[in-house]
Image 1 (tube, helix red, strand yellow):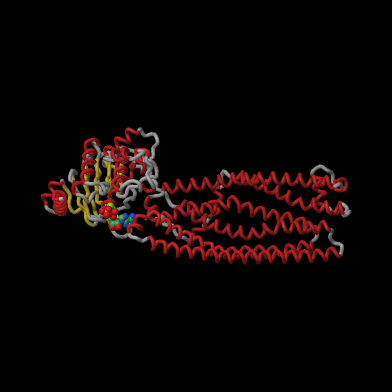
Image 2: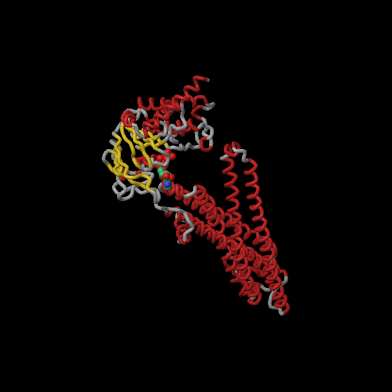
Length: 616
Ligand SMILES: Nc1ncnc2c1ncn2[C@@H]1O[C@H](COP(=O)(O)OP(=O)(O)OP(=O)(O)O)[C@@H](O)[C@H]1O
Ligand SMILES: [Mg+2]
């Protein structure tokens, strides 16, 4: 299910996703485009004013200046404004006014654009996060966390860059080219053609070069990812590195990767230098062509000095956006790849409740009825049937990999049974008929490897709920035998749990996780090897406290330690996905099977340890 691979479909309809997430920002985008067009028009008027200044100083009649005359007419100054204005002061004032209007609209454009794009990306992040939260457990474990994180950060950042910068650059460059050439061609066709002829060359040169460079960019990105992975692995595995004296080895490994990374960037630097150099050469050649044609036209009297200046200014105004357009379009290609990768996440099916799923009370006996299950091809549970009476305790003992955790996974529907794989019922109701969230709020599972948030201990026990009274948190911690440990910390329940709970010992982490499950107060509780890092005495105290306070709760306790299971009403022994023994502990002891053998061995070891302790 849902494996994230670069499929043929990863580029399928990414534009549709862009369109979807733009909902709510489209008005803003339109406003930004309108402001952009006005600011481009202002930029574009400037050379016309300069031309007016130059040509009126050289005595060129205003009838030769149709653009400035029509602007003056549009502004209500009369078509003969150019003749009347004459004075440089009026024209200079006009330059300032146009620059001010242009500046104001550039600000409006940038600001509305920022609001539009940030709003759009916020929606994308929210959608991704809430979708990922609703994806089945199976999806989560089939995908590397790093991959998900990279998609939700780097890929989102690429889309953000496109939405906030590149999209508007494409519109700006196109508008500039259209505006400029719609004036230049009527003004002087030959010169305009000389300038225009270079545009496709410059554009395609940039696009093709940067498209090729993106392969090197990708390699550099991957090398960076690897470098980060080595660093991260080292920092979080610092204890193992120190314990095994691997500092030198790890430093060398990092240095080798760092060298590769630096080399890739130097290669990229070389490529980019060549790109800029050749690009400058092409624009230089274009300028030479314009000057040559301009000189020829001027000698024939076909162009004024002002017109010549307008050509040069317009040309330099559009050349950078056109050079940039090549880059922007190759970046846009990356955006579409990223959108495709994000779409893959958003299209993975979420965990759906069955039709008519209910919130009936999750109460009564737990029944596994001929359950067979496999994660992949190999069967993990084979025809497993058992019943746990409400309010009793089932202990599960079994070799590693015998399927004990799988029983817990199936009970809270982290995985679902397929057709013909049997049925699991609670109080005679098939668990598929409960809503997922309802079932899980009634079946508390303390996992084999507890996960704690980087929050305070109190928040961890309260399941991140802020309003839980501290007394309830303390009561739960007392039952889990972790209250006195917590009180010894400087900030007691306000102590921050470090990244993945490193400030707590393994046993403390387990007990905090148990306290969390106790506070949740579910009628069914599953402890999956949750007492393995706790000493035998604490283990016994936790079980005694649970037994005396949690009346009516049905327990399933999975453990390798016989003493943890000895108080259970019924013990089930599993081997290779099958139940091989089942019954009350005393009966299993009498039968002399696996349970009795393990019990004997563990008693022997405990006896030896007690003797050693006595002797010492
Ligand atoms: N998500 C998974 N995908 C594929 N195989 C899995 C998955 N989870 C567990 N398995 C396999 O299923 C088998 C049973 O695993 P399970 O975790 O239920 O064993 P267990 O009895 O809890 O073992 P332990 O005592 O070591 O915790 C193992 O062979 C394991 O490799
Ligand atoms: Mg297990």
